[in-house]
Image (cartoon, rainbow, N blue to C red):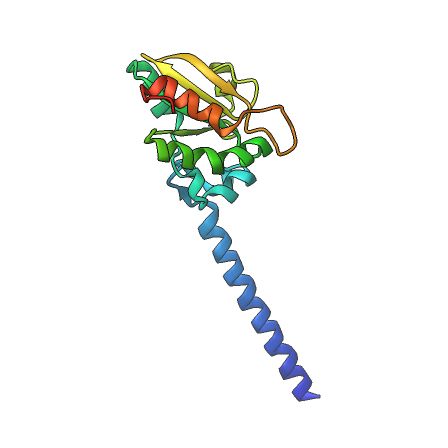
Amino acid sequence: MKKKKKVKMIYVYIGIVILLFGFIFVLNNSGKVNALYDKPVSELNPETRKQLDDPNYQNIILPAELDSMVADKEDFFVYLYASDCMHCQNTTPKLMPLAEELGIELPQFNLREFPTYFNKYNVEYTPTLAYFKEGVQVDKLEGGLAAEGTTSGYSLNDYKAFFNKYSGADPQ
């Protein structure tokens, strides 16, 4: 009888230790500020959290930087997307390598984390690839890559032509 009691107590102690480690882990990660978004990971949309280590979502800009680019009247492309948008999730892994191949700096702005920017830049659909000239949005491609077997959406050649149109590159 004593042996059963000792075994039971060992399991209780092991359970307590596991709970304590779990609690410490949760506390450490809940307030951890993410470098890309400058806010605690616990405050990010679940789909954004899934993308934190994805190499296709590492050129994130924050509202202050986007606002500064506009205020400074810069010429730039920006990719406006929502982390939970299936069209964005289909487009981003193909668009980012294309931009890199063409030598285009393409900052990414996650509208799901900063939803007031949907209205600020008149974004009806995500993803949206926009071009700003002297801080003013002059053109955009709204919507993602056409899904296989459909005709609605863009092709990679459409995106390439858009980049070439505004980057001064020769269309090929």
